[in-house]
Image (cartoon, rainbow, N blue to C red; front, side, top):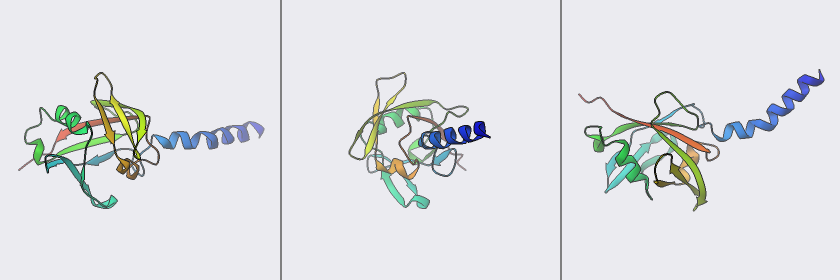
Length: 140
């Protein structure tokens, strides 16, 4: 019985750390950014975000991710998570906090991008690592 109590106590201590990299709700999050007002923006009605802009280095990162996606400016699917998933193409490591958000360094590049406080509408805590993939949206 003492061993079980020890294991449960250990899990209780670890749970906030495990939750830090887990998206709120789903294991994977999906948004559909599009280009407007000279930058990438997205809407997420469930989280009350309308034309939420990407700024401070993130538009350049997105440009690189969608370079091979036809008509990406009309919208593309961006899947992201605090955990690795099959086919992710971008790995971003958390850096310093600033203005309520966090800077992230894109692994394998010299690129930095700032994710604003809207990050916390998807994650309880800023993930140590964010994994992402951009895909075309089938168009008719």
